[in-house]
Amino acid sequence: MQILVLGAAAGGGLPQWNCGCPNCNDARTGKIPSMTQSSVAVSLDGSSWVVLNASPDIRMQLAANPQMHPPALRGTPISAVVLTNGDIDHIAGLLTIREKTAFDLYATQPGLEIVESNSVFRVLDTALVQRRQIDLDTPFEPLPGLTITPFAVPGKVALFLEGETVNVEELGDQTVGLMLEGAGHRAAYIPGCATVPDWLLDHLDGVDLLLFDGTVWNNDEMAQTGTGQKTGARMGHISMNGEHGSLARFAQFEARKIYIHINNTNPILQPEAPERAEVLARGWEIAADGMEITL
Ligand code: MLT
Ligand code: MN
Ligand code: ZN
Image (cartoon, rainbow, N blue to C red; front, side, top):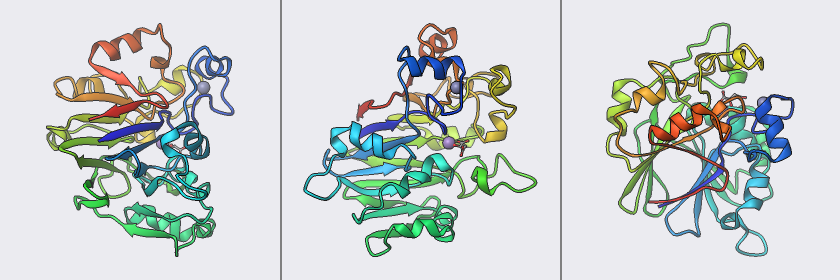
């Protein structure tokens, strides 16, 4: 199984258009690598690919990675796109891949509802782009030999669907992880997750690879960096640090572990940061655009 990181950043990317924080400024000057928004591609044969989440940066991502280039005068190696939730960083790229080339679009009911109810997505010709509903704990096979099973993880509805009150740890089909199985290997892709309960650790037991929500280091990181008031928890993202953070929760977890969906405020993006050293010392890798993983 081949996994290609198209975009390692959380919503906004690195640099984010309106952010003058040290990380974003360092990305602008090339001191640290820029990152595009949250997406990975998966293949078994290196020629047909499934893209997990369609980022607003997908045009750049497809240009930057030769595996994603058209195999003919018109066409794409992308057979399918699968959505894990309805946030802008995971769906806006659908509008970019609208030029009359066929692929299947897989999403749970809330994701498909967003696509159906917003008329702008009608640019994806339904004769070419088949909408296929996927259901929790029900495997589907977007490529021959590649099985994907969506499972609920604690999370919230898309930002633009939030009402007066928001359950940030809702367990339903609005936020899913994807279990990828093929060629004798299993990988889990979870770019958004609010908490790591024991049952989730059990569910992930035995995977070869975990790609997991690395949005923030500290829950109150946006306030600390002066970039905003929202906590990681309020955004539906567990922090790495802290007693109930992902570093602690996955401390005994045996698998290759890679943080992905990393926010531009996260101190691990700085090469010399103690937070980065700690993450690496605790056995995690940090995703970067263009990273290739073979299982
Ligand atoms: C998130 O992961 O919290 C979202 O990307 C927020 C957004 O849609 O901007
Ligand atoms: Mn996001
Ligand atoms: Zn920034």
